[in-house]
Amino acid sequence: MATGILYVDDHEIFHDCIKNMFDTRPDMNIVAIANNGQSAVRLSKELRPDVVVMDIRLPSLNGIEATRMIRDAHPKVRIIGLSGYSDRDTVLAMMRAGANGYVVKKAAFRELILAIEVVMSGKMYLSPSITSVLIDEVFSPLSPHEGAPEKYLTMREREVLRLVAEGLSSKQVADKLCVSPKTVETHRSRIMKKLAIDSFADLVKYAIREGITTL
Image (cartoon, rainbow, N blue to C red; front, side, top):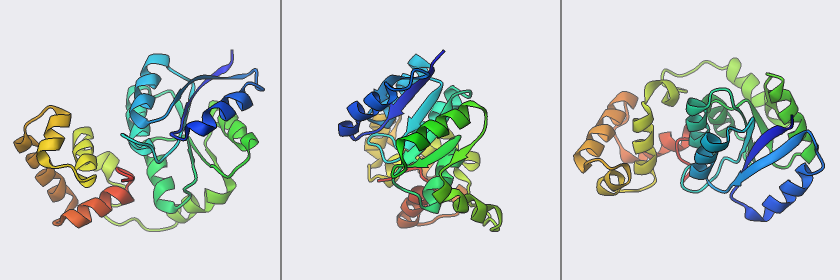
């Protein structure tokens, strides 16, 4: 049976191209293409693909948060980050969110195929150009709060943090989440207390550094 793939990328110009390339692979099949994080989460629940190839910088919900949500709802799915970004913070945030692999966009199509084959075999795949990122992480001491969002903040707190960091007012966040502005303020205060952060600017920096928002 062919491996079912959900491809997520907001650059629609590449959609037909990726379909055509996978058409040459009888063992792999694009079951759907999403152009934003929210669609990716919805389609993964509806279609249950074997693999999700996930861009990082996406509208409405970034690929890191979408990966975390898909992983929570569908633990057995394999997720591969596919991005032009290869910096330490982005790679680590994606892997902490639950990705099984990470491929840089400048890589050839055959590397993406290899990555899919590797993660389907139960192993992890990283583009050779970014393996040093994780090697450095293994041998570098962690600060007390480094890597905390997944373990330290609840899903709702991450959601509130993302929206607040993106500049929405408490009322706008409340409208989106169907809660009261007072509830949003309570979440915000709790988040800042948990993270030992006392300014909005530092809160935004934290959200960007940990991949909770890409702005």
